[in-house]
Length: 217
Image 1 (cartoon, helix red, strand yellow):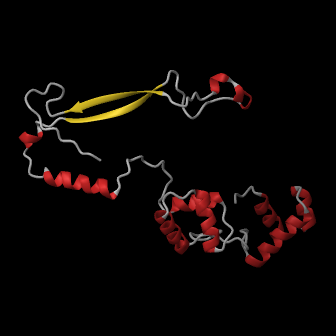
Image 2 (cartoon, rainbow, N blue to C red):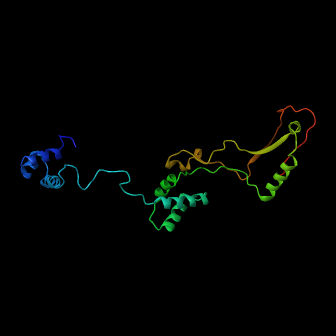
Image 3 (tube, helix red, strand yellow):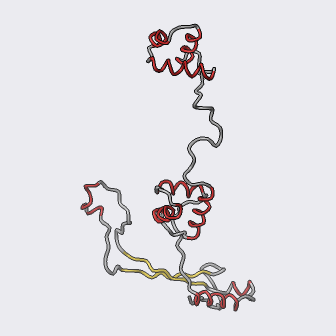
């Protein structure tokens, strides 16, 4: 507190013997405020708040989830990686027997050094396909670099041909829900184009004979 603060002025006048009523009138404060401050000063001998000690590390409102709860939450999130925050919140309420909000669980997940990301797409391979890949790699394990340079690797991709294809999201106002420019165009059987490409150690121009190494997945 600075020396010009009301509390300091109240204490100075109180030490000089000025009555509480005169102090309140001169400083334009309520009598109850002056009374509480003088009583606190007479008991503690200081002008600081006796009921509010200086804050130290670890004081304040404790978090609703302690370290043990966070470990259980982290284990659940890693075990069920595809669960939504709402599903995790429902589980946490039943497991911890506490009233938890979605925002609370979202912050707790970040405290566990986890974060929500968009899943990376990757083709699914069953056990038969994985075994074929393993056998193919095992059969070509002893190939030399010179022999691999004679291999032509090819792949094909299918592209939908639709003029003016729009995405899943659109920027509009609430009243533009029937605006044709805000529609997502879709057809039952869109036209498609199959594109075939190949790659080798010698780029496009590959003279000579080749071994066609194809993995049938």
